[in-house]
Length: 68
Image 1: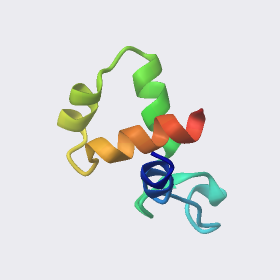
Image 2 (image 1 turned 45 degrees about the horizontal axis):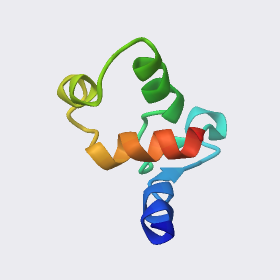
Image 3 (image 1 turned 180 degrees about the vertical axis):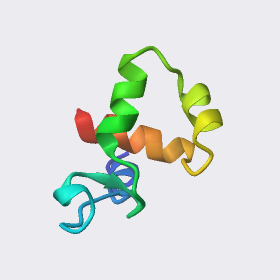
Image 4 (image 1 turned 180 degrees about the horizontal axis):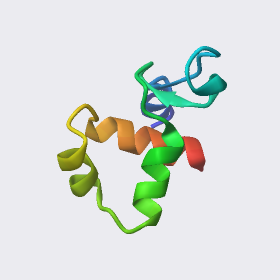
């Protein structure tokens, strides 16, 4: 399980040149905070994935793990 968690957390990166170093997903311009806000507003994983096809299920799981 720990190996899986490390793999998921490896999807979360930071880059000082992208969003001032805030955590992003896989180096793309998609902030972890944006995914968390969508979930907090009531969107499901499936809704997020449908609306943002650049994301993968594991990206959302990584955001939740990162927040925890």
